[in-house]
Image (tube, rainbow, N blue to C red; front, side, top):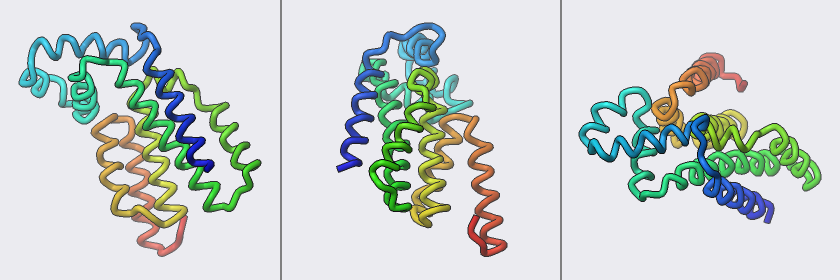
Length: 184
C-alpha cells in the first residue's frame, strides 16, 4: 500500500500546482505569455522559430497549451517529477528491504530538501532530473530497464539542454562498465 500513498501525495502536489497563480519570475509565467503569441502566429511559425533549442519542451508546452488551460503544464510536470521521485524512493525501499520507518525517514528527507516551488517554477529541469535519476538507479543498481532507459535519456536532452552533462556521464559510466566488466 505504500506506493499508493506515495501516488496520492504526488496527485495532491499536482492539484496544488494546478491552482498556483503564475508570476513573471516563474518559467511557466513567461511560457504561458509566450504561448499566446505562438498560437496567434500558427503552427508553421511555431515549428520554425521555437523548436531549435529544446524541441521536446516546446512541443510539450504547445500540446498541453492546445487545451487552453496553461495550468495543466505545471500540474502534469509536478505529477511526473514527484511520481518518478517517489517511484525511486519506493524502488529503493523494496530493493534494500527497508522497514517502513526507514522508508518514512527517506521520504521525510526527500520532502525536506526538495523544494516544491522550484519544481513548480522551473518545470523542465526538475522533471528531467527525476526521470534520469530513476532510470540511472534502475540500470546501475537493479540492473533493469536498459532498453527503456535510453530513449528517456535522449529525450531529456531535447527537453532541456542542461541534461546533456548528466546523460554524458551516464554514457561514460556505460563505457567504463563495458570495458572493465565491473559494476560501479
